Image 1 (cartoon, rainbow, N blue to C red):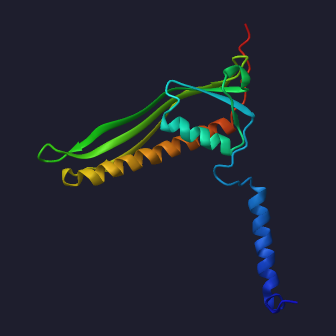
Image 2 (image 1 turned 180 degrees about the horizontal axis):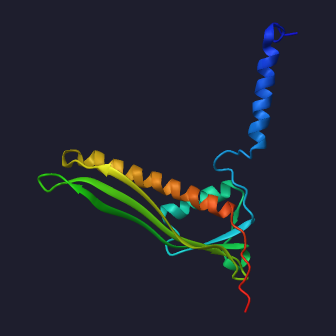
Image 3 (image 1 turned 60 degrees about the vertical axis):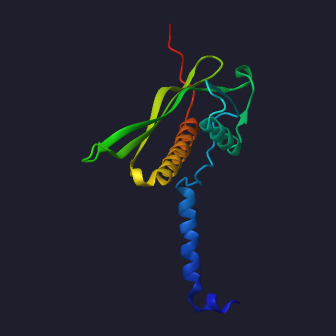
Length: 175
Protein backbone atom coordinates (compact mmCIF):
# COMPACT_ATOMS: atom_id res chain seq x y z
CA UNK A 1 0.00 0.00 0.00
CA UNK A 2 1.12 3.56 -0.74
CA UNK A 3 2.89 5.19 2.22
CA UNK A 4 1.17 8.58 1.67
CA UNK A 5 -2.23 6.92 1.90
CA UNK A 6 -1.23 5.30 5.15
CA UNK A 7 0.01 8.67 6.52
CA UNK A 8 -3.31 10.52 6.32
CA UNK A 9 -3.89 10.60 2.55
CA UNK A 10 -7.41 9.18 2.94
CA UNK A 11 -8.99 12.43 4.15
CA UNK A 12 -7.54 14.29 1.15
CA UNK A 13 -8.74 11.63 -1.27
CA UNK A 14 -12.19 11.66 0.32
CA UNK A 15 -12.32 15.45 0.10
CA UNK A 16 -11.36 15.35 -3.59
CA UNK A 17 -14.03 12.71 -4.26
CA UNK A 18 -16.71 14.75 -2.47
CA UNK A 19 -15.72 17.92 -4.39
CA UNK A 20 -15.85 16.06 -7.70
CA UNK A 21 -19.32 14.72 -6.88
CA UNK A 22 -20.59 18.18 -5.86
CA UNK A 23 -19.24 19.70 -9.05
CA UNK A 24 -20.93 17.05 -11.17
CA UNK A 25 -24.19 17.36 -9.22
CA UNK A 26 -24.50 21.12 -9.77
CA UNK A 27 -24.77 20.72 -13.54
CA UNK A 28 -21.32 22.08 -14.31
CA UNK A 29 -20.07 21.49 -17.83
CA UNK A 30 -17.21 22.99 -19.77
CA UNK A 31 -17.88 26.20 -21.64
CA UNK A 32 -18.57 25.50 -25.28
CA UNK A 33 -20.06 22.08 -24.55
CA UNK A 34 -23.72 22.98 -24.90
CA UNK A 35 -26.43 20.37 -25.32
CA UNK A 36 -28.71 21.52 -28.10
CA UNK A 37 -32.45 20.71 -28.13
CA UNK A 38 -32.24 20.05 -31.88
CA UNK A 39 -29.94 18.13 -34.20
CA UNK A 40 -30.11 20.10 -37.47
CA UNK A 41 -29.93 23.84 -38.08
CA UNK A 42 -30.04 26.13 -41.08
CA UNK A 43 -28.39 29.56 -40.80
CA UNK A 44 -30.18 32.28 -42.73
CA UNK A 45 -28.15 35.51 -43.07
CA UNK A 46 -27.52 38.33 -45.52
CA UNK A 47 -23.77 37.75 -45.42
CA UNK A 48 -23.00 34.04 -45.00
CA UNK A 49 -19.28 34.77 -45.42
CA UNK A 50 -19.06 37.10 -42.41
CA UNK A 51 -16.56 36.21 -39.66
CA UNK A 52 -19.45 35.88 -37.16
CA UNK A 53 -21.24 33.27 -39.28
CA UNK A 54 -17.99 31.35 -39.88
CA UNK A 55 -17.21 31.24 -36.17
CA UNK A 56 -20.82 30.34 -35.34
CA UNK A 57 -20.70 27.44 -37.82
CA UNK A 58 -17.50 26.08 -36.23
CA UNK A 59 -18.95 26.39 -32.73
CA UNK A 60 -22.22 24.69 -33.64
CA UNK A 61 -20.37 21.85 -35.41
CA UNK A 62 -18.26 21.40 -32.26
CA UNK A 63 -21.55 21.07 -30.34
CA UNK A 64 -22.69 18.24 -32.65
CA UNK A 65 -25.24 20.30 -34.57
CA UNK A 66 -25.54 19.34 -38.21
CA UNK A 67 -25.69 22.44 -40.42
CA UNK A 68 -27.88 21.82 -43.45
CA UNK A 69 -27.98 23.52 -46.86
CA UNK A 70 -31.74 24.12 -47.06
CA UNK A 71 -34.21 25.46 -44.52
CA UNK A 72 -36.59 22.59 -45.33
CA UNK A 73 -34.02 20.07 -44.04
CA UNK A 74 -33.58 21.76 -40.66
CA UNK A 75 -35.39 21.32 -37.38
CA UNK A 76 -34.60 24.97 -36.56
CA UNK A 77 -33.79 27.99 -38.73
CA UNK A 78 -31.54 30.65 -37.20
CA UNK A 79 -32.08 34.00 -38.89
CA UNK A 80 -29.28 36.54 -38.40
CA UNK A 81 -30.82 39.67 -39.92
CA UNK A 82 -27.93 42.00 -39.06
CA UNK A 83 -24.34 41.73 -37.89
CA UNK A 84 -22.94 45.23 -37.41
CA UNK A 85 -19.68 46.44 -35.90
CA UNK A 86 -19.93 50.12 -34.90
CA UNK A 87 -17.45 52.71 -33.70
CA UNK A 88 -18.41 55.83 -31.81
CA UNK A 89 -16.33 58.67 -30.38
CA UNK A 90 -16.57 58.57 -26.61
CA UNK A 91 -14.35 61.47 -25.49
CA UNK A 92 -12.30 64.26 -27.03
CA UNK A 93 -9.09 65.65 -25.60
CA UNK A 94 -8.36 69.34 -24.96
CA UNK A 95 -7.03 69.86 -28.49
CA UNK A 96 -10.19 68.40 -30.05
CA UNK A 97 -8.58 65.05 -30.85
CA UNK A 98 -10.25 61.75 -30.10
CA UNK A 99 -8.95 60.23 -26.88
CA UNK A 100 -11.44 57.40 -26.42
CA UNK A 101 -13.72 55.31 -28.63
CA UNK A 102 -16.56 52.95 -27.88
CA UNK A 103 -16.74 49.87 -30.07
CA UNK A 104 -20.10 48.15 -30.41
CA UNK A 105 -21.08 44.87 -31.94
CA UNK A 106 -24.77 44.48 -32.70
CA UNK A 107 -26.51 41.31 -33.89
CA UNK A 108 -30.22 40.90 -34.61
CA UNK A 109 -31.47 37.33 -34.60
CA UNK A 110 -34.42 35.00 -34.21
CA UNK A 111 -35.00 31.25 -34.50
CA UNK A 112 -38.04 29.33 -35.68
CA UNK A 113 -38.99 25.90 -37.01
CA UNK A 114 -40.84 24.57 -40.07
CA UNK A 115 -44.24 25.09 -38.43
CA UNK A 116 -43.27 28.75 -37.86
CA UNK A 117 -43.16 28.22 -34.11
CA UNK A 118 -40.81 30.67 -32.45
CA UNK A 119 -37.79 29.10 -30.75
CA UNK A 120 -36.09 32.42 -30.03
CA UNK A 121 -38.09 35.63 -30.48
CA UNK A 122 -36.57 38.44 -32.52
CA UNK A 123 -33.92 40.06 -30.37
CA UNK A 124 -30.97 42.38 -30.70
CA UNK A 125 -27.76 41.50 -28.87
CA UNK A 126 -25.32 44.32 -28.17
CA UNK A 127 -21.78 44.20 -26.84
CA UNK A 128 -19.59 47.25 -26.27
CA UNK A 129 -15.99 47.94 -25.33
CA UNK A 130 -14.28 51.25 -24.59
CA UNK A 131 -10.69 51.84 -25.59
CA UNK A 132 -8.31 54.77 -25.44
CA UNK A 133 -6.85 56.18 -28.61
CA UNK A 134 -3.56 57.92 -29.32
CA UNK A 135 -2.60 59.43 -32.70
CA UNK A 136 1.04 58.64 -32.00
CA UNK A 137 0.32 54.90 -31.89
CA UNK A 138 -1.97 54.45 -34.89
CA UNK A 139 -0.81 50.96 -35.90
CA UNK A 140 -0.92 49.63 -32.34
CA UNK A 141 -4.39 51.10 -31.77
CA UNK A 142 -5.71 49.65 -35.04
CA UNK A 143 -4.42 46.25 -33.96
CA UNK A 144 -6.02 46.67 -30.53
CA UNK A 145 -9.32 47.62 -32.20
CA UNK A 146 -9.20 44.51 -34.40
CA UNK A 147 -8.51 42.32 -31.36
CA UNK A 148 -11.40 43.89 -29.45
CA UNK A 149 -13.78 43.23 -32.36
CA UNK A 150 -12.55 39.62 -32.54
CA UNK A 151 -13.12 39.22 -28.81
CA UNK A 152 -16.62 40.70 -29.06
CA UNK A 153 -17.42 38.42 -32.01
CA UNK A 154 -16.35 35.37 -29.98
CA UNK A 155 -18.44 36.55 -27.02
CA UNK A 156 -21.41 37.08 -29.35
CA UNK A 157 -21.09 33.55 -30.75
CA UNK A 158 -21.04 32.17 -27.19
CA UNK A 159 -24.19 34.15 -26.34
CA UNK A 160 -25.99 32.90 -29.44
CA UNK A 161 -25.01 29.28 -28.70
CA UNK A 162 -26.13 29.61 -25.06
CA UNK A 163 -29.47 31.02 -26.18
CA UNK A 164 -29.90 28.24 -28.73
CA UNK A 165 -29.06 25.60 -26.11
CA UNK A 166 -31.95 26.85 -23.94
CA UNK A 167 -34.40 27.44 -26.79
CA UNK A 168 -37.62 25.50 -27.14
CA UNK A 169 -40.61 25.88 -29.40
CA UNK A 170 -43.28 28.23 -28.19
CA UNK A 171 -46.88 27.35 -28.82
CA UNK A 172 -48.61 28.95 -31.75
CA UNK A 173 -51.15 31.63 -30.76
CA UNK A 174 -54.73 30.35 -30.78
CA UNK A 175 -56.87 31.87 -33.51
